Length: 348
Image 1: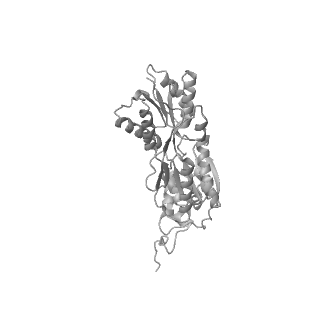
Image 2 (image 1 turned 60 degrees about the horizontal axis):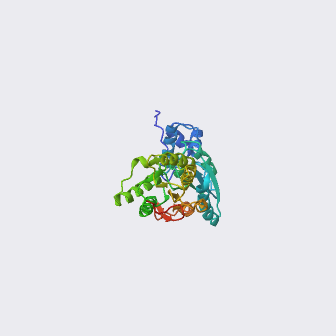
Image 3 (image 1 turned 135 degrees about the horizontal axis):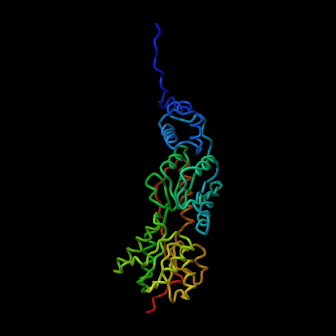
């Protein structure tokens, strides 16, 4: 007499980890599809990718091939690779990477501070970097999982949103920076202060605005919503908004631009309208990029230690790649007001 036995499911205990073929069987896909997910290929449906990633993450599962040794490089990912901001970050990353014998690969996504859902990760995973540093952006949960399942550490620098507790990040004291800018202008006698902010989704911009408002509230000076313009951190944007502010029937006597590029735009608008800085208009920026001291007059600005932030992020990603746990997931470096020639007491 012949008996029929049910097929024995793949052993999923830690002693007998899953192969790519077994993961494919459990997911109901081909081994080739599993291989595409493992290697970060983009031509896989999101639902299928999520299912395979879940199986890969389960205890006892493994890839059929041994994970290649990480390449001796750091992947530095920008959304927009332009201007002195990016150069300061690159300098900080290269300084630490060089100490550890690592090269730096720089990628530019040009995606308005939001990495695309697919495509860019494929290239990064294919290079098998020591670690990844993502600048002024963030990762979706799915993107984070793709790096996590391949043991590629990721650290964010100046993230646009709340990175949460899982993703390590390095930022600056944006709230205190906004506070110090407002206090400086208030001490000079200014009350009608124009604001050119950054994008609404940027955590740094929101924090600078909150710090500014806190100082104004403490001084009993209301923040006039008509003097607030939402910008995008570009010089062109600063120029357009400064033209609008300075054309008001009662224009501001000072402008706080939320980065130095926008402050440059304010300088241009003041020049076009025949206003002298700081005699007729005080201007404060944010970042303290090298160009700030070469403007005429030199720009009063809040220093954001970009190179130091990038260096801290690189040290963190190298440590994580070595299997060390970061002492803290969120590092925040201090900002400080640098007073130069673009601000002066209000003349009655």
